[in-house]
Amino acid sequence: MRTVRPLRFLGATALATLVMITFAPVAAGAGPAPEPSAPRTEVSVSSVDLDGPAVSTVKVTVKNTGPQRMRSLKVSFAGPVGWAVQPALTSVPGTFGVGATTAAEFRVQVPGKREGFTLRTFTATATYAGGDGAGSATATRTETNGVPLANLAAAYNNVGITDEGETGPGDYDGEGNSFSAQKLAAAGLEPSGRVEALGAELEWPGVAPGAKDNVAGAGQAIALSGRGGKLVFLGSGVTGGATGTATVYYTDGSSTSGSFGFPNWSFDPADAHGATLVASTDGRNRPDGYGNAGIAYRVFAHSVALDATKQVEFVVLPSNRDVHIFDMAVAS
Image (cartoon, rainbow, N blue to C red; front, top):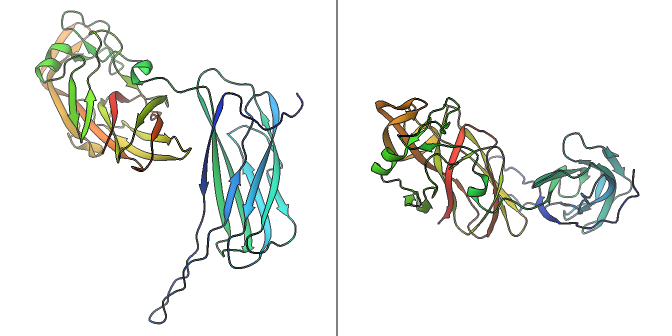
């Protein structure tokens, strides 16, 4: 084991999110209006040196912003699953007046770096008596290694569109089937064509039929810039369970998460999972050629909410390969 390194960033970007718990008195029946809730206890986590293998020292700071003295303070700390932390829980002796700050230190066994882009989340929880009266407060910190993929096209891992004269490369659904490029064009979806959906301006993949043209979700981190009220996804599902959570990270280090889903590209109701139908094609390409005429194979749009006051930096896609995404864009 190497000597503990000073806390610093080595090609890593720190994303810190402070989560604070509030306590508000509950009024019982008629009577005077309840007093305003006390200021919230603040918990923060220092940076974590991810240049492993090494032992990194992490400091958790707790500030008493409540109207009472804080006592019986205990602080717990946890890293990613399987990472050793010593101690996992520590008691902080003494009491702390209003505005006082104290800290607890933890040692984290950091494994060797992994290839590519990684997110590592750390969580600290303080429990106490007094203070703001809530009894507990929690903070999380997410550190990153590497950089997200430059755009969605860099993450393409599936062939969902083929020419009717050469259907062999297609495998949208894991059974060798794919959209017909000719039928998509008839429905208004042509390579590099503009697609408007849910207030977003999207683009249909600008690749030749038979090339990788969409992303089957596997938790990929994709760079994306923009500011707006929602993030719109263009795609469809290949089972009835094509749902998942997308997490959006902003340039200020905060993040929001939202769940969405797509109907199966055929058979599911067009509004399943709250999606919106964008285009419908007749039939599909099978390994032995075009077939299933008279059955609709479809593309949908869905969205997750964003904090419109913040600039988007990157998006982590759902970890569900049944969710297929052709494009995504920020919309107002």
